[in-house]
Image (cartoon, rainbow over all chains, first blue to last red):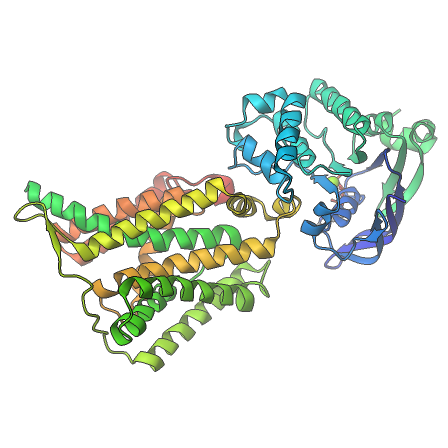
Length: 235
Length: 289
Ligand SMILES: Nc1ncnc2c1ncn2[C@@H]1O[C@H](COP(=O)(O)OP(=O)(O)OP(=O)(O)O)[C@@H](O)[C@H]1O
Ligand SMILES: [Mg+2]
């Protein structure tokens, strides 16, 4: 089992955001989490990457429990997180942002090669590598956030609403990039409010409602599910 | 007239040197820890007392005493991180209050250890560089200027060119996003506290032979540092240095031609003007205020 959540609960103070959810993500797949605002999608990803405290339950990754590990150690295990709202470092340059993604890596030649690979994938980032990240457009910042995560050489990539606030043409490009990343052998756990996009890309999907898994199944089956169509696809 | 201006410029350069060391440390701690360290002036004072103990009292070479001041006060910074700021993480107001408590402890310790008297520290050197009859720079002041340039240069290199320097800037900008890159928040906090406190300590140590060392000397230093970082833009290291230089020149100029009290008033008014014209300070940005 690659990634497994077993009855995981997370609360912020008295607010319970995730109420005992169980999930599994198989290696090499794209798995999607869809759901309305406040359903607990981001919180689930934050619990996996260690920036939200897990109150009960277990998270296992590649055989080890990670739910009591600090965030900076989880990255070292091979999980990178493209957070909601991108969260790039505004006053670092594009190149510096990318290099912070490789903070834990000591294999210098491989880091340089991966930097080249990111620049090859996102030519805009190469053009702007000396520029402060805050001066980039929304789409470019999203590319930067993805590139930064790839610099960690992750086995599992968590992506939180990569399409948020972007023009349709950029959303298409992001979708293509997610497919590419997956084809390169990186497992992807994708959170999206854009259910159409998520179910299109994913092999398997979970539907979250108020902190619990309401539905799960192969993405194409969910795509045809009446409840999902009515509630999330607006059909 | 030209002589007087040149002399004032040299005096200002000296003042700018130690003010910027103090202010840059304060900004660094604020950026990474998210707390306003009110004890920063007392860290400066502690550095001066290291020189009192080792150089004036113990007969150690001055440079050694200065290095010890940096190291000892840096360790005080680590102690603050461990005992105050770590338990109060996510509570910036609590951190501020705790730092005020620490300020009083440091003052009381200095009073108990050395008494409230002014310390006499023998001059490091009596040499003076005379540019002309009236334009003179004492070597002891030149030392402070050179040390500040070297230390700030080293800090700049560390922040811009090293892995941990990037990590420090990244966590100052977004601590959670930094943790997601594998950067340990605890580690960057310790680095920031050691460097930030150490810079205040070394500033106090360097200037000890040139000012009156007493347990309450930190007070005026931190007021100046606050003005400077507000003018420079809270959170901006470059702003702190530029504002230190600007403040030192204005303050020294006014002190020379009128007097010190008017200079303080002018300094404060300058801060108000900057706040009215550009509320985020010269180098500040709205989202980081
Ligand atoms: N830092 C926080 N403090 C308190 N409550 C929070 C915090 N973050 C999230 N919550 C609450 O937890 C619940 C789940 O939030 P979460 O961000 O996981 O939802 P989401 O599914 O990602 O929503 P969205 O689609 O709007 O991003 C919400 O009720 C939210 O108000
Ligand atoms: Mg969310």
